[in-house]
Amino acid sequence: FNFGFLNRGIYDGWPSGHMATITSIASSMIHYYPEQVWIKYVGGASMAYTLLLISAEHEAQFHWFSDGVAGGLMGWVIGRTVGKNMRESINKHESTSIEPI
Image (cartoon, rainbow, N blue to C red; front, side, top):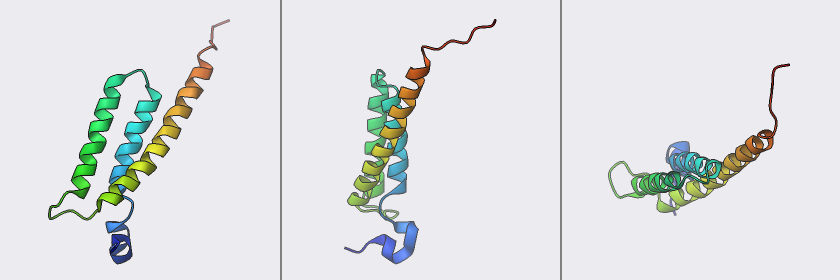
């Protein structure tokens, strides 16, 4: 293993920050709007496309496949936590109403 993080620091690091960002956004939207099926398809496609791009064999490639998987797992957990907690906090406040006196 020749980890990029040990060679050039955060530029070739583990895990992939791009994959973590895309996955956390998709995961938070999927968990905030669980009834919207199209968000699951768009989110899944964007995550798969990002994983393909960062780990494909081309001249600009500097991530291993495992970098993308690790970034995806971290992003999924972060997005799931944010999406579910925001959904629960909104649901708790639905029963209250503000009316003028």
